[in-house]
Image (cartoon, rainbow, N blue to C red; front, side, top):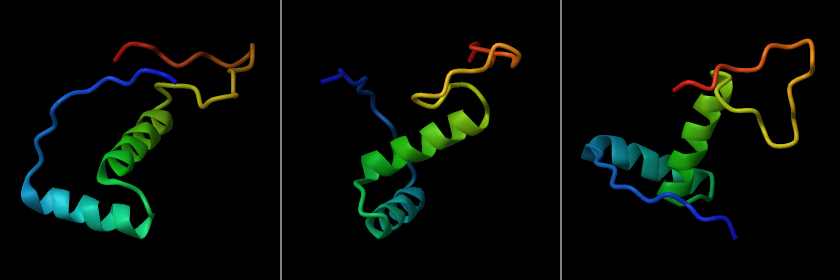
Length: 66
């Protein structure tokens, strides 16, 4: 099993309530919902390559700097 990085995240109560409701609608935990949303945002910005999809030789690789 892959190890996971743990860290503390402070959210305002309104944001947490919205994430909690959204997570319930999608049958996820709040933690999984936050991870899903962050991963989608990072993918859309071209910061990481989705699993199983390597960039083609003629395509530029995404800038790895964060």
